[in-house]
Image (cartoon, rainbow, N blue to C red):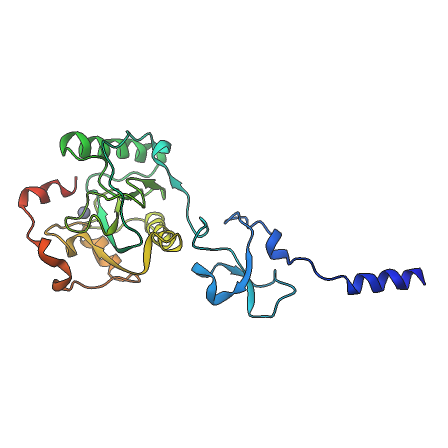
Length: 256
Ligand SMILES: [Zn+2]
């Protein structure tokens, strides 16, 4: 009789929470929420963790306020950046992502890429007289992403677009070959991250630097690669606005 009572009690005990709410995702490191998949930014959901919910409710691990869906980024302090001389806040989400290459040699280890990062920053600040390293982010062929001006400050990389774009530069020269898979995957993941965090519009337009200025950047091979990516839009001259007439001396300083 007692056994029957215990079994009955177990059966009628309400479910107090789904596994989703206490699950720590190994990659995203954050407990999820049981919501419709169409409301899950980035689409990072697991289907079997919302036991008490209908089938169309799944465990979502992304939200606009979390860092879910983002690769790890080597912060400024992580690569030993100098402090910026000044900063200008940028209105986000931005409508454009602009792809660059740095020209010059590549780097395939973190320590080599950090040496490059310091060199770019010194050149941009001391020789060009800029406030800081020009790009929003840089990516090495070591597969790492290095923070430049970051998501929320105006950069110095694409004349006329600095206050409305994230500028991502891959370290190296991609005229005759494209960046390796590690670098390309990192750039794609970074863009996706920016969208999921609300820094880049989900309807963003992707362009190469040469689409917006008289420059070969980001190199023929890399340019042909990004033309295949989601959100790339071929050049529409009317998009460029009145700022397209760029002084030649400025262009010389655009890329190292
Ligand atoms: Zn460029």
